[in-house]
Amino acid sequence: MEKTRSKPDKTRNILPGFGLTLGCAVTYLCVIVLIPLCGVVLKTLELSWDRFVDIVTSTRVLASFRVTILASLAAAIVNAIFGYLVAWVLVRYSFPGKRIVDALIDLPFALPTAVAGICLTAIYSQKGWIGSLLEPLGIRVAFTPLGIVVALIFIGLPFVVRTVQPVLQELDRDAEEAATVLGASRRRVLLRIILPETAPALLTGFALAFSRAIGEYGSVVFISGNMPMKTEIVPLLIVTKLEQYDYAGATAIALVMLAVSFALLFVINVLQWRSARRIAAK
Amino acid sequence: MAGSISVSGRNVRRYASVRAATGESPLARRILIFVALAFLALVIGLPLVTVFVEALSKGWAVYWASLTEPDARSALKLTLWTAAIAVPLNTAFGVAAAWAVTKFQFAGKRLLVTLIDLPFAVSPVISGLVFVLLFGAQGWFGPWLAQHDIRVIFAFPGIVLATVFVTFPFVAKELIPVMQSQGTAEEEAAVSMGARGWTVFWRVTLPNVKWGLLYGVILCNARAMGEFGAVSVVSGHIRGKTNTLPLHVEILYNEYQFTAAFAVSSLLVFLALVTMIAKSVMEWNEERTEREAKRVEEESHEH
Image (cartoon, rainbow over all chains, first blue to last red; front, side):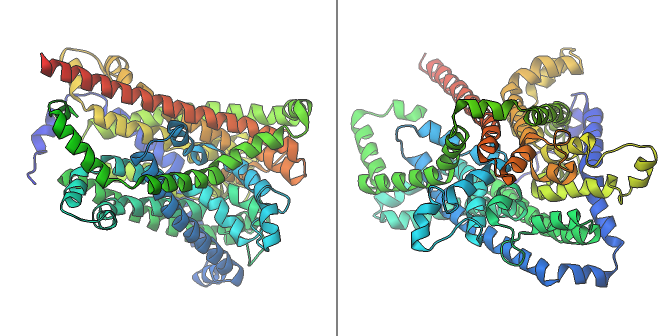
């Protein structure tokens, strides 16, 4: 690619307000987000290394990380499969009420997590609409790890749909048609043309849903039952430690979670950057 | 597409048959639609219906009483005040950040955009924790605040801070792509004709991005009123004093007052529905403008 954006372009920019807006934005960012977050890191530094390792490798903390990561992974996989299907149906087919269905996908974004939590608990508890159907089959959802997965599926669904949907929409159908005319079966077209083109978006959606699920608190605490070692998620453990005034413990666990979240954020940014470059290259 | 207008009838038919061949069979299509809709009904539809069924399960009188009892009213008031401070602050920031990022080239721009997203990546519980570590009794400023008898944690300022942190990226995130696609040509023209900075913003930029900005503000507001995790950590749950609506829902639920919990929840569901309708209206507006533009272009080609 040729470098079209060279130095003269910068100096030719005649719009006002660069210093003011950038200054305000950066100051506000530092005061509200960056300095408070640095506080967590500095607070952890007050702990000795041995103490830090002791806290984050205690059996209860490790169990909560295991529950959180496994449940988030399971939910993100379900969301990747069904989210892709929903995006596909919304882009390719038409059916009555499609606009309303499309709008409703955003509900988990807009609905407060606590409300989602009590609704799901009401539905999946033993007396609930679905819980009472599953009870004779010996399946319990509320107050088990399965309940955590259900809550995380609700929370993560829009991330996959809204990342895959625009890519499917923009997908160039020429290649698909050419392959069909040349005699490729529908399955081959799906696997060899459509899936590879949409895979980066699907992966980004998966990573977004997973990353959101790791930190989720409000919707999970109601349905999970919060039993230590079994259904206790990491954010809840942080809250419990805070309520016991164990600030050192809460901060140490929070630092590990922050590290995980930032690693995920980095991966997501690389994924998005790469797919943006792919689109620009076309 | 413009090209399809000029093809002859036979070509259109052949084109249509290729289209049909690249799609699924009607049966497969129906099954896929059914599975997708069944999944959505289970995951999204059912919780939505549950709120209203449970809220009204004991009739309108109980529903109304749950909404008007003093604790619920004070929770509503606190929620409204919190949003009234957090939303304008984040809107001003969002507009400033979007202007700097989309109208200028500078080093570290990508870093800035990533940092704006940071609160999305942080668990809400940690968003609350950072302010406890700063302003709590054992925090950095704790002793100083205690000396001066200022309460931040377990009080209104802490709730506002946590809410501002959590809703920080929303306006900027909605506005940046919209302003990016608008480019800078119109603003440059205005400036070269002698318009001042504010005039350019009010008269040129704002009319172009008003829908994106409005949706960003509405989404930011919905999240500000609905935030649970972060606010729960800093609020202290003092009934009638530091309980926001979502925290009030939690308390009612934990006290087995299910009907009241769902009644208060229904208020928050209305807020969510308004947010979603606003988004749909914005998208339909965009589609219509695009279609209009396309139509005008095609007409001008024909003449």
